Image (tube, rainbow, N blue to C red):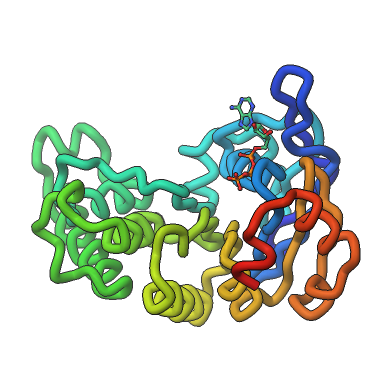
Length: 259
Ligand SMILES: Nc1ncnc2c1ncn2[C@@H]1O[C@H](COP(=O)(O)OP(=O)(O)OP(=O)(O)O)[C@@H](O)[C@H]1O
């Protein structure tokens, strides 16, 4: 198992945003985390990537306890994440954004940079090549010199994926990759995610678009009010009475409109 989550909990004030959650993420698969609004999906991602420290429970990645490890360390361990709303350096170019991801695997240090040592120059060349490779992979190489904030949201999402990929993750956490995209773009993101898996990257995604989740996921974990209420294949989840009840009870239009 690539990632193992046991009894994970996070409280905000008196509220259990995530409570006693177990998740197994098998290597080389796509795991989807779904649930109504406020179910705790983003909080779970923040716990896995180290943006929040859990109140209880453990996170084990490749057999190593990474519970409470900060984001700059989890990313070195091989966990990268994208955000619901893209968080790019808006005034920087697309290439510079992706180069920021390359820094994680850079071997030269600050002194190398200051003195422009051969190691630094080598490293810089390798990073640029890597960044361009990832931009090509996500279909955004032609945007390399554009300022990130000038791009439409769909392109920004691709760039943020390239940034995450530049950190060379073993596990990629995608927070609502299809949010705000039309059907055609959603399908294209689905293809891209499959290509990531083909590269050997394990993907875990939070997504409201049920059509995408059902098409893509090998396994689905369902959260409701912070707790795991079901886990299984798309077929199993579709017919799970607890899941149906959670979505209907939430009285939102996601289950009906997008399944
Ligand atoms: N930083 C925070 N401080 C206080 N409460 C929070 C914080 N983050 C999340 N919560 C609360 O925790 C619960 C779970 O929120 P979370 O954002 O994880 O849900 P979600 O499933 O990602 O929802 P959505 O689908 O709407 O993005 C909600 O009740 C939310 O209001």
